[in-house]
Structure formats: structure tokens, C-alpha cells
View 1: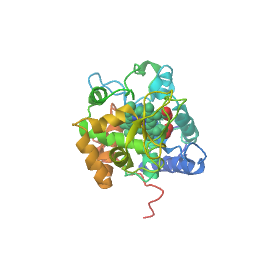
View 2 (view 1 turned 90 degrees about the vertical axis):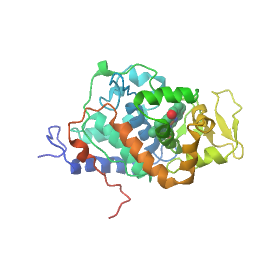
View 3 (view 1 turned 180 degrees about the vertical axis):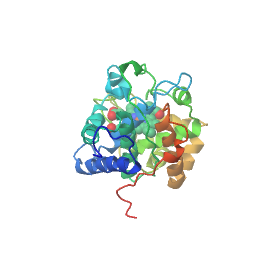
View 4 (view 1 turned 120 degrees about the vertical axis):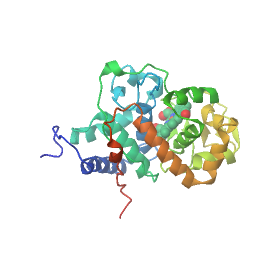
Length: 291
Ligand code: CCH
């Protein structure tokens, strides 16, 4: 059978690895975007596809890929994610058997691993849904708010305080764009490599309000080249969050272990996997693994 044909009946781990490898090679090739990588925006696409989940109603989550459609594509929080969807479209064209929902999550897994992050086991099985499955606006976090808001949003997905802090370490990656969120700048000095720098910088730098005409954000006192959102700063201001920030700042290994576990959960929210498919949580081989 033609492995790339639309009719591929039972795609195997090797088939998904071929898609992974294609995403990884496009990441390497298209290095003139932003800070040199589409990786961060791919992580954000996978997160925003998943983070709409509501555990009470079982709606939202990464099953469906409904961000392809208006109104979800036009939700303020999703501004700029067209760059990630467009990046993945040629991959979908080459492997038409994969669903958009599985592809976007595989894009997130691939980006995390290729940016030297931990292995995030990947389980396929998402199906695409139509515009009627779009979630209402307001399910993703609002960066202008504080700790209570973070808890409201992430508890709705079923996460606890430790998991909120672990997920937030993704802000080691990428940057804010004035024309997308209104905020501006990167969180770390190496925005295309996943490290625990988000936590160390949060604790070790002195942060001032940035003086500008944009939305309220922090800038580091010494170089004035890094930023923090009000929600990021809530993680050190809040007694429930702060101990986890301190723990992850001390140990990149602990951060990687907890980040992998919580991202795995995030990426599976709301997906009606067939029973017994936990054993299909595959390790997709990163390009840097030469074993
Ligand atoms: Fe985030 N994030 N995020 N974020 N985010 C932004 C960018 C990225 C919030 C707000 C923003 C997570 C949690 C939160 C990424 C991953 C995650 C931006 C800038 C805002 C604003 C967007 C722009 O202008 O392009 C808020 C609030 C929260 C609350 O918790 C979580 C969780 C994750 C993943 C696990 C990544 C990656 C980026 C960089 C995107 C890029 O294009 O560089």
C-alpha cells in the first residue's frame, strides 16, 4: 500500500515517525522565522488546541482541530497561530491520512523534542470535527490577570498548582509579538531551546514594569531585553505556586520529568481514545538521538 495515500487504514508507529521526521526536517530547513525556528509557535498551537478543554462538559481539547474554523481561529488568544497551521499544511498534504488534530499535537511533540526538551510520549487517535465543535471564546488564559484566574482556567482542565507551574515553563520558548498578543519580547536568552531558564530568570532577575504604551508587562532591570507577563509573575507572588518555581529553578531534570508528564496529559485532554491504547503512547525518535 501507498504509505502516504489517504486510504492508509491502520497507520503504524513507523508511519507517525515518518510524519515526525518530516516536521523535524521542515523545522531545520525553515530557520529564517522569528528567532530561527517555528518550534515555539508549533508548541503554542498544540497547547491552544488542547487548552480549551472543560472537564465538566467534556468539550474542547485537542480532538477536533476546530481552530481551522472561524470563530475559533479568530479568538484573540489564537492570533498568530495561522503561522503554525500554515507551516504544517504541506505536511498534511504529504501524509493525507493523518488527521489535523493528530498532526497538530505531533507538531507540538516534535517541536519540544527537537528544541532539546524531554521526550513526550505520543498517542494518536484524534479525529477532526466540524465548525459546530468550536469552543466559545475565553477558555484560554488572559495574560493580564493573576493567580486566581490561572487557577480558574487550569482547574477547569483538571490541572493542579504544581502542574500549572510545570506547564508555564514552556515560556522558556518563543516570544510575544506586538501584532499578535500586544505584548513584546522573549522570556529567556535562548528562546529556541527548552530549559528551566524561565524559572531561574523569574527568581534571579529584578523585574520592573516596562514603561511603554503597550499592555502592562515586566522587563528585566539589567538588560531590559527580557519580559514577563502578569500571569508569569503571579507564579512567584503566589504562595501555592512559588515552591514549585523554586524546585524547577534548582533542577532542570525535575522540570523535564514533570513537564513531559503534564504535557502528555494536556495533549490528551478530551480525546476519546479507544480502551487499551495507553500502550500506544509511543516515543517518537528525535533527530538528535543517534542510537
Ligand atoms: Fe503562553 N503565551 N501563555 N503558554 N506561549 C504566549 C506565547 C507562548 C500565556 C500567554 C501567552 C502557556 C501558558 C500561558 C507558549 C506556550 C505556553 C504569548 C505571546 C502570550 C500572551 C503570544 C504572541 O504574542 O505571539 C498565558 C497567559 C498563559 C497562562 O498560563 C502554556 C501552558 C504553554 C505550553 C505548554 C509558547 C511556546 C509561546 C511562544 C509562541 C511564539 O510564537 O513564540
